[in-house]
Length: 393
Ligand SMILES: [Mn+2]
Image (cartoon, rainbow, N blue to C red; front, side, top):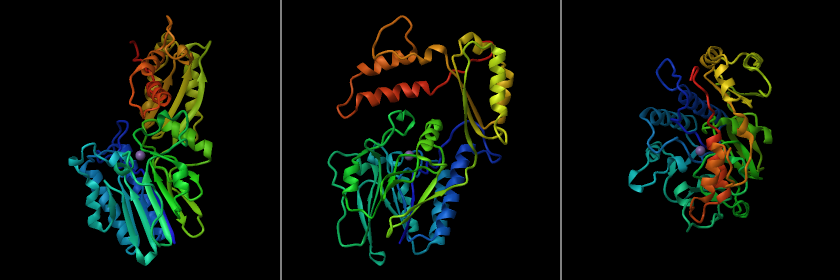
């Protein structure tokens, strides 16, 4: 019995300014293509059941273009796998704050897909001896929810749920997706499941045997560089979906061909260097990329760049690099950005990050929000924004 596990498609996601010849945001087109490639791969493997663990769309009100694309891909899936069961749940990105807003996901029920948007739904497929407990974000985000454990006599019991497994996300998790419901890993492990298909964490990851995040199909968080670091920690080499043998518990990673590369260049230390030397170091780094930076996503961090040196850099050369790459993020960091100061410590040379940290440390919070994580995310978001001085400014 084979299961295909996908999650976090984020169709309609847009980033950067470049458009395709057809006038579509280039990254939105990449994300759409990744889904089409995943559907090709799923059809080729002929699974008995396909689950999509939330965040089909990046927003509650996706564009018509994203809806049509999603509909066509599911239609291809149903035509390619006429006997397979397909189960979809809503993630936090698919779930409207107000219930009267409604959700577009129900549209896909027209194709014979099982869709859970508000409440947990226990779906039984007798011909497969299979039960799927589909738990959308709205059903897990409430305080009074049912325990997630298997019921009934079916041999194969699958849980599909969208949320954050407590303790799994890295401490420097500010790049990760906010807004997920918390899941207790021991509850998942003790539920008696044949397999737990998780959504929300965008990097492929085994939580425990038979409990997995498939990750997203492309880099669709505001800061993909943190995802690269996470991938390296766990030996993951890209984005894709999972093919699961429910009998043996064997999980095969199905990597997708990426539309473009994500290149995080080795950081430069600008201390005691002149503007010309920094310029040279930047060009050396860019020149070291095999195959070139054209149409790729590139980041280069330069530490210890005082404001006056940043102004004196060769901005024409930097602009040229930005024009070649799909996105070139030259992240110039000022010397004092490194300094760490205790929470709330006053001082004449507080950085902006210090001020924000001190403010967030005092801000009243709802009881359920953990202060340290809240503060780290706020400061992380601030620090993810580089300063890129205008020439002559
Ligand atoms: Mn997501």
